[in-house]
Image (cartoon, rainbow, N blue to C red; front, side, top):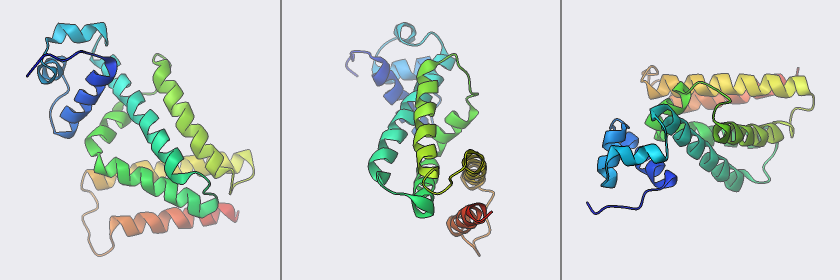
Length: 186
């Protein structure tokens, strides 16, 4: 493979390709895919943890852009359901990337990650505010939806929902809608 000009973005994109292909994202594997030596990557990421957080920030930023474009102007329970369903769908379609994100502990050490999560939280909270008017309702809705969604993604992604008599997609939609209606009416 011809030698490529390295960049943070290029390293992250190559890491994502490797991860989605089921390969380990070691500096050695990434360097091989880029046609360089692993030592060259240390100029961009001091270690594997920094790279994993770099990938996380990149993914969350791109998720935010996608969600902003797709759901601009949507409101209320229908908007929330559509937004959350899209997040769940993308997470399941890219489950290896989702697993990487979910295993990364929240920390303030990587400001880029903090900023990306803050942007996602802002988008989500603005959408929640179109249906839930009090801060306590918004916080409860946010936690409730995140618990339901992340739990569903993990269960579906790891194969725990094997009973096909009621699809995981249908049960998620029903639980999400019922939860939102219950919360809106309390």
